[in-house]
Image (cartoon, rainbow, N blue to C red; front, side, top):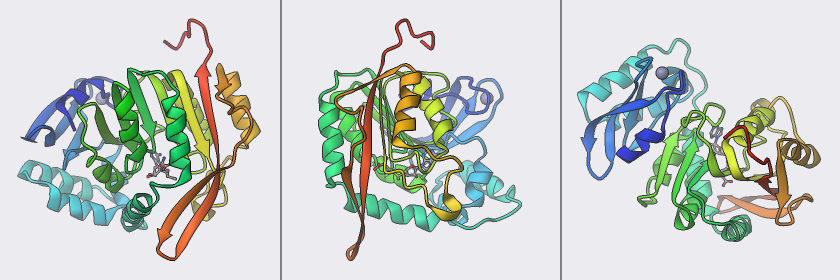
Length: 297
Ligand SMILES: C[S@@+](CC[C@H](N)C(=O)[O-])C[C@H]1O[C@@H](n2cnc3c(N)ncnc32)[C@H](O)[C@@H]1O
Ligand SMILES: [Zn+2]
């Protein structure tokens, strides 16, 4: 992460400012700690990736293999000790999602030419230049990097370390990535001119997510979803339909623009492997914050 990113980040526990303690530096902070100036909670930065998570041990409890890798990736004895302590706090080891998260990096890399991303980029081109942009669930940062070409400062967040490690390969001075949970913003109450949330509503509780992201957007909110709610054990508790989503956005003060007031069916092809692809049809919405003198800032 860039040292300059630290000033935008907030403690995900008490929302206070963070100070940075770099351990290994080049152009970026490769390894170090972000510490809360109020509650002293420490957040690690490993291989240039900051983890702004409320409970790092719980995060690793379902990613033991990643925990082992982070031990190896950590360069300083201070960081190795920190990861070891976090692993030591785990009481119950749960089913490991590390391999699955690593596999998805390959799937997204094989799918960047899908018509869906072309469609989204075309829509993005029609927007005015924005100062602050945030993409939730940005995965490997394909679109985030594109957003950075036409906006001033762009951040991508995702819960998957492997996705963010891949996203960090897009190197631009106005672009940075963070491992974080969209339901607990690493930016505190900061608002963004454009907030992008693609294909996340059927993965993260949709109403909680919508509440978080609609409050974060000062000007534009771009949301898409294939409404794939039948995910077995991983299904969210409440579903949302295209009409309910549009109603929610309108009631939150957004005007639906660029012909997105009606549901759309944009092809999104995910190349799972050389013999299998998933063909979704995605609904895409662009909202413009129509609230005058928005009391939310
Ligand atoms: C279906 S993928 C969509 C990726 C990308 N937005 C796109 O459309 O190409 C969902 C992404 O959200 C991430 N994710 C899942 N739960 C999350 C959460 N609570 N907070 C942030 N990211 C999350 C996953 O790691 C994954 O990269
Ligand atoms: Zn704090």
